[in-house]
Amino acid sequence: MPVSVLGCCTACGACLPTCPERALLPAPRRPVVDVARCTGCLACIEICPAGALVGGTAA
Image 1 (cartoon, helix red, strand yellow):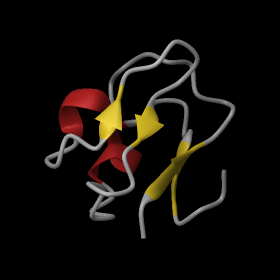
Image 2 (spheres, helix red, strand yellow; image 1 turned 180 degrees about the horizontal axis):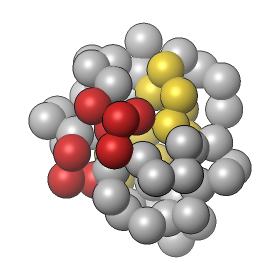
Image 3 (tube, helix red, strand yellow; image 1 turned 120 degrees about the horizontal axis):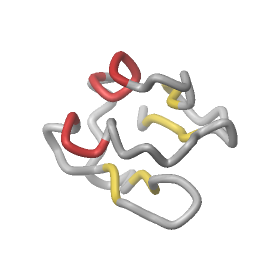
């Protein structure tokens, strides 16, 4: 399942280079998840300082 970006995201960008599939795309308010690319590896969740990334579709 792809990850979801919650509203508490600060758009710091720490997650962007972490994704091995390049499924996180920069956007003005918060990154956007390319669900076709996201494999659900959850690497981005571990690096997010705001805890704004979750597994599944909780957004």
